[in-house]
Image (cartoon, rainbow, N blue to C red; front, side, top):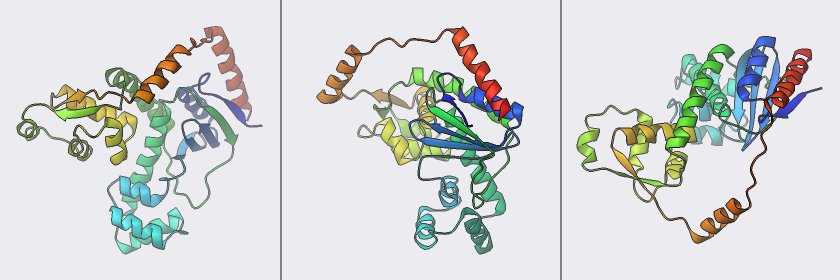
Length: 278
């Protein structure tokens, strides 16, 4: 019988700790804002996916800057039924990428998915023992100890960034003489992309979507730009229907009943017993 629960009672960090300690093999599925899966072999993370799209090798290489948009379009039109392993072999033979490029891109994709799951406070989860990704997927073994440490650090940073930038539906503008100041600052490729989209017409959320950045990534970049004094917020008035909906929601909001520590401990102990018995 599969292990089931909710992230409200058992966080991603706790789940990964259990899987690591018990050296479990199987797949953890989480149903949150979008479906996500993490697969493990003997306690090591080997694969992860989120959502319905963007989990194939071509998209991973594109996000890593190893393939251009045009190359990905050609691959998607001509190699629709090609598996990740077959595609990787073909791309290496054609000289487009190296084996190292593929390993690094898949690894980064897996880590990006897992680190995002650390920020999820709610979502139904299910662990299916001995269930693994299909054989055509490329898997990379990753030690969970380092993933848990980095994920916990990012979770604390995420909480701080949410306090500093609670609303992504605001716009940004440059402060006085940004060109002169930008010349003296070393920005990453992602930071330059964000900078190129900054104008009063684009919200932070729109900038994130245009650059395929997560909420965490765009908040981190914008926070750095704010701290450097390069940009500032423009608070745009929200449409009347949005204000009415938010006011109605606030009026009908009831305080959330928090579980007592003893209840949470009881749930945790039961889950520990269950996962060890799988």
